Amino acid sequence: MKSLNLYDIEDLRFEEIDKPVITSPTDVIIRVKATGICGSDTSRYKKLGPYNKGMTFGHEFSGIVDSVGSQVTTVTTGDRVTGCPAIVCHQCTQCEQGNYSRCESLYVIGSLEPGCFAEFVKLPVSNVLKLPDNVNFTTAAMVEPSAVVAHGFYKTNMAPGATVAVMGCGSIGLLAIQWARIFGASHVIAIDIDDQKLTIAQTLGADYCINSNTVDLATAIDSLSYKIDVAVESAGALSTIGPVLTLPKKGGEVLLLGIPYADIQMSREQFEKILRNELNIIGSWNGLSAPFPGKEWSSTLHYMSTGELKISPIVSDILPLEQGAEIFNALINKKRHFDKVIFTP
Ligand SMILES: [Zn+2]
Ligand SMILES: [Zn+2]
Image (tube, rainbow, N blue to C red):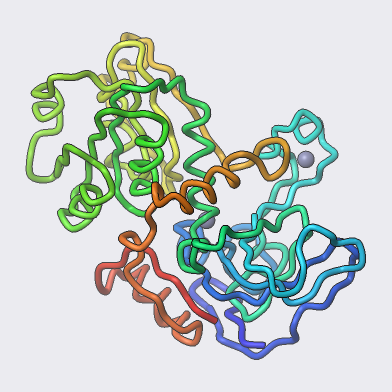
């Protein structure tokens, strides 16, 4: 089968490899129809991290069940599905308590096990979810990032009528804007340095957009007639992790979703906001809860089905897998503007 495999830093190869085979009675093999590039993939492409040399890359996807192990009863050949790419041990104390995102040995396919940048991928049946009929494959390829965002929102104390600010309008931020609405926000503020991204943010439900490159952020926030209950950091950038602390009202919340890929810095004033304003800082990892893989996944599929989670405005490119190496190179060298990139193997 066709596959995209990571050999070394910036060494991604499009190759023909063997199709996976059923080795456990609970295995499911899925023919991949759509698979997305995640921010964590571009980071791993640049500097590796836990992985096996030559491993098939990628972890966000949707597809059609190709074959199932002898004990699989919940899905069958031909079913339209998506997969939760996180593999947990189901044995450690955190797993026993249902805190699967905190599993001591959590990993995601595409690192230590083959991922989904291929024609076929294999997962345990507990990680396979059936799609509602009206959710297409491109949309369903983004169930995983949406579940990750939802996981964070479930940790907040958000109530209907809240004001939410989202800092960073990449695909995670654009999902966060929509989840803020689903969680009952009456005002959603989008902050980015790219007008193109802010335009998409507006389409997806942000009612006030701030380009922090062209206007002073503090002045723009002060001019609002409402106070921010929850500030979401969804860029993981040096330029947002400090400033996001200045956004919420006293006693407000900061939801950290963005993963920084370098050391971060902040001013004393920014740090002091945590103390003086008694902020509640919420760290969030992956998107898992009990029963595995969790409500993050079922509610994502529900809201994709109702149309409250819109994916097509976030997707900028749908390309054949053959172009994988070239696209990763263009992405990290910022050769042009990309939002979400989806491959169709
Ligand atoms: Zn991802
Ligand atoms: Zn565990």
